[in-house]
Length: 417
Length: 100
Image (cartoon, rainbow over all chains, first blue to last red; front, side, top):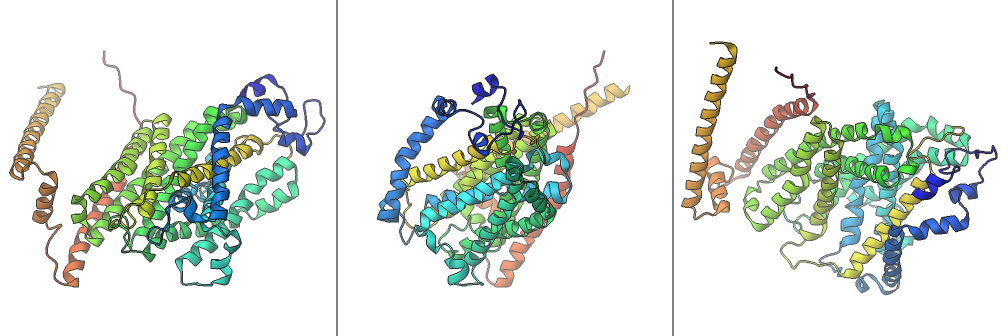
């Protein structure tokens, strides 16, 4: 794509009109203004596509096998270990990484920080796709998509955390779709729709804050269903909800830093000057938010140990593992974020963001899988489970890239807005 | 004595005192480790017992008095540390003046 972008005058499409004055048809926009042969050549030339092809070629038959043969054909799931990688990584890991939507929405629309506008849509898209694919992972785990509305409408349990999570994720997903629609409407040229969405932006953003803050915490509270199964260091019945919520703040911001870094390096042709020239400044601003959230998270983790009086566990092997998670996943990126912000070094902040994201996924895997049933045997996921997880992530990557190539997320639409 | 010389003397005194404290702490730490057969975990346990972080708890009131005490200390420390941290990372670097 990069080479075609540099040789062609007509792409990237950022306006309804062509250079000669005629209009782009929707089909042309979907094909990025390329002929079928050029588009095919672009796909074949990119080595990332070959890697994706290999992942999907093995992963899709495995996923079909899971639906027809049941969960036990591809996972080691059991009554003792009901949550494997699909939920441990896909749901509990992806949701905090998707907190970017409400964070940047609040920053720009509520706090009026217009200096973060160039990255707002990327954060909203990151939030939307992260949540959407968390639901897809949930679907792969549940295996019966038609039963998805059950916790919301059929088995009504208003006092249950799962009831709250189901409703919040569903409504927040709708809110996020609405928040990203203006980009689609600009792209297809339906300005009436965009104006209507814009008129309810504040309402959408506030709904996003309420729903997102509550269900990020509720996902943590979900573990209070099994308080004796999880190692005491990873569950504090009083504090786990705020651990999950607070960690989602720096996880979401770090994920936006990572995605924007990848776009800057591998999708430069699609970014406009406004995005590229502001990115380092915005990265430092996001890094500052991460540093504040991380130091707060670190302190409330220690407060939880004090509250539950679990100091003795720190002296065990599990305790050292816990300290390793806190040290590598929180303290190290916290130091790097602080150093990067203080010395205005965007590169250090990007490195810290990568470590922070790995750290938060590690924490969720520890809580849902590794430290779950710590007194029993350790469940090791089967390779098929790992591969299906990778397959869904590959599809997430492809959808993300498909949208970024087309919609005005990384660039400003030059046509009517 | 001029201001420059005063500064040098003060810096020297602080550095010497710091070095002495460091040597003392290192010696104490190594000595303590030697006494517990080089087990870091055991040393931490003894430290926690000595400082009251781990102590026998008989009643719920004991328990809450104990955990709340430590929680409040952590929270107060954080209330002091957080503004300092914010000030630290927002502190703009000033260019170092070139002395000729």
